[in-house]
Amino acid sequence: MAQDSTITIRAQRTDDQDELFLLLTNEAALLDSVEIPYMTEESFRDRFGNPPTGTHVLIAESVLPSARRRIIGASWLQVYTNRMRHTARLTLVCLPQARRGDGERRLLEAALALADEWLGLRRVELVIFASDPADETFYAQFGFEREAVMRRYAVRQGAYADAWLLARRYVLKQEAQP
Image (cartoon, rainbow, N blue to C red):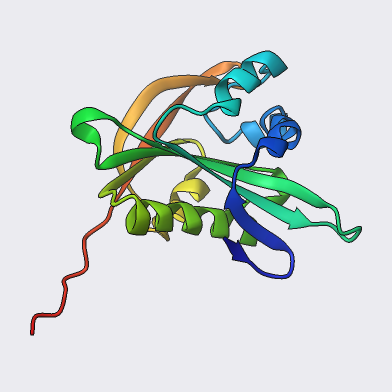
């Protein structure tokens, strides 16, 4: 768990359901993600209450001035099965006021540390919309590179939108030879 005076990065807990539902039904937060808006509470609980095997969920929460805690972002690292066991798909969703801030940056760093140092993954993929080059610049700071253009990938604000598949490879550090 990473922590400073206002932001904590931690694993998902069962009591996060209500706040996570608010995050994933926030239209502004979902606009830049490939998640589908207008999820019913029942489908949300089915999908996020019991994540599939190989899914690792991290939560970014902020401490408000009232000392109450609030979820400002979440990331899902879904490890592929079978022959692609070395690869995972990353999804990151943050409230608009937390985007590109310390919370989103630390959430991404924690997810990548989990992938590299604990899960032994060699590749992490994510999908972003092609119409937002600032996203590509942000993820490039963490070693992600564009690998594919996916034409008409999703409907965004009533029109088909292209997306980019970004990937980051982790190279093992060589152990010092005696």
